[in-house]
Length: 192
Image (cartoon, rainbow, N blue to C red):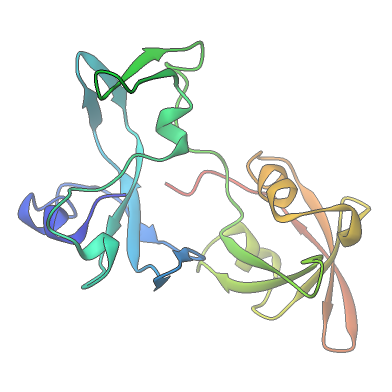
């Protein structure tokens, strides 16, 4: 995630060939506004990661509107390394692991889902990207996911749902829309 002042200073959105709206992102400070695309490369010391997926903040305030830092590195980058924290010398050592050369950017259905209810086992669709697998399949904001590939929602959590949707495999969803129950097949794909 790159902070808005840095994105504007370096004119990064103009240098990025394709971006899509970031959906479903937020935290303690509220919803995050950003575009998602790919940089040509990210260099960390002598190491280079080609075409990393990057969020380009559009926030005017909060952490991602801050001009004191340029951004932060997330799990998709850090998962490519063995990480050693050397507290005595106040440094972090990154050593490439076996996944270092693997491309970044899992498949996506283009949908944001939240867990609701006392046990967070009711999964509501909150946002969809236009021209995404989810919108093309007919999902709508407000739909409640009852099951995925025959697994009831009570057997799932948000982490499992996200992992299921990161593979370009057709997923059969049973969703409740008002009084109707619909069967919808969504096949995630790389969006950028």
